[in-house]
Length: 338
Image 1 (tube, rainbow, N blue to C red):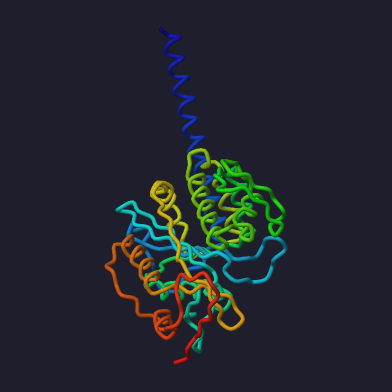
Image 2: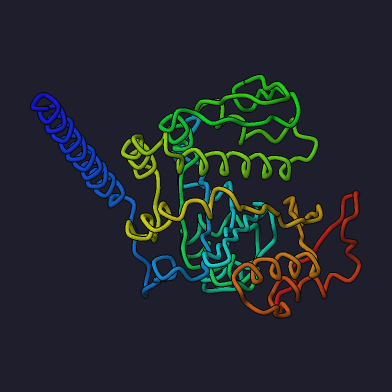
């Protein structure tokens, strides 16, 4: 009996020490992650508490073409995705916006309509946010800007991701990396080449958008899994050095604790445009119907009623009466000053 009591006490002591160690390690991870994340936090004007209050919200994800393959200039937003999340209904909607979409740049002194990816280059994340909000008639509550070079570090920090490649290809423009159709495990450098390729894709930039969505979903699912909790510090550290956001660390905590909403219920979509030439530049022109469709979908996710779009893009489409949407031949499109 005495030996049994000693064994119980010893077991209780080991259990207690284990709990202390786990708690201490968890506290260490929390402090380290918070310190790393503070490097990226760029508070915006005005308060925004949608995430912590579990209200519907949107995040504009901007992938900037810097920090990879020797690119160090400020760069345009090579990737633009808007994420609408409704915590109570457990719905998420991820929509890609083609970088060549013709859009009014909001925030410039004079009327300025050009490719939407120029908004970031002209006025940073704030101008890109306002431009997307105006294009789709939705509130854009948060932004997360990350250079494409950090993608490699992010994927490596969580031990790689599993992706189903839709077709076999090899693209000399992204390091001549070979991809074979089917399931494969990708490290950081391979993931970066995978999302950058567009020349060998039969769908062009739209195919690349689908692959970008694939990789983002895979990263979210892997980063929020139990096995990745111990990798939180290197993950946050790898992100923070190449990222800027107005999402606070407290907001990030809330997102992480409700990660099932993000990782299991993500609907994907994209804004479809028609090829056009404006001067000597190749653009994508979204029709009124397509802009309205995407706007309605995002607003529905956010719990907002439908509203008819009345923006500059709609006005310009009305003036280009001869333009044929969904045509498969070259057309010219004119920007009318007014």
